[in-house]
Length: 233
Image (cartoon, rainbow, N blue to C red; front, side, top):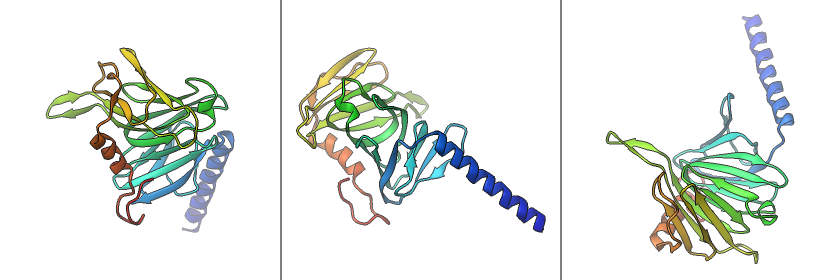
């Protein structure tokens, strides 16, 4: 029995050492700055077990980040970019370098405020979705992404809605939304585009209906639960 306990302790120590080595080899690209609601969220590198996220935890490139049904998670990156992920959202930092920040949203609602990298040159910051890529230039954006799914025996394509918001500072504000079928430039706050499926180009730039933006905002507000009363992230 004592040998078994010693063996388990050695194994646990080994896992901690492996985690420390991995973290040292892959420097953090950002930290969790806020979790509200049910506070159920995780990060999982390919081939590794998922780890539960808490405020202050580091985030690494290549990890799939998932939020629970009642959780809002905010990540602040080294260049001062901020991503706020709504409930049931899946997100990954694909590449984070001094000159490039590429991420992917698989599904869910999010808001992002660009940082220093996005100000350097066009397409330094890219947010990929299943139906289009969003190129960022000094701005604040909200998006809602659905993944491909089976419904009533039929395959429903992925889709996305993207809305440009007022920038936090005085920087120029614009996004390029594109896929292999076409592209649009959105440079007026309150306007955006819709990609209805995987076979269509982004729609012509349009004033986003208030209820569309409100729906995204509502999803991103802190849900009820342990995080306290609802508020905008």
